[in-house]
Image (tube, helix red, strand yellow):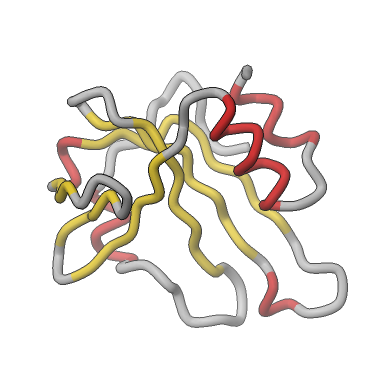
Length: 110
């Protein structure tokens, strides 16, 4: 899957399913100053990861349904996604930690 194709999906669920089929199977989450891969239970420092793309999804009726999907690759080859709230809701992820994860300048935001 070409990561620029993330824009064609109407929902975050559809985008995540397509990414899983393309090998982005891990789910990442932030906690206590680290990023965790939930399935493998590996923990990462921000510099061990790279955000290769992101896409925003807006809820049709409720601004609190607005989400951003980060597509992440780790230096050890693990690939996956991380979801976060955007807009009116409190962030589900540690915003300071997210800022420390480098963004691939070739892909940028979607």
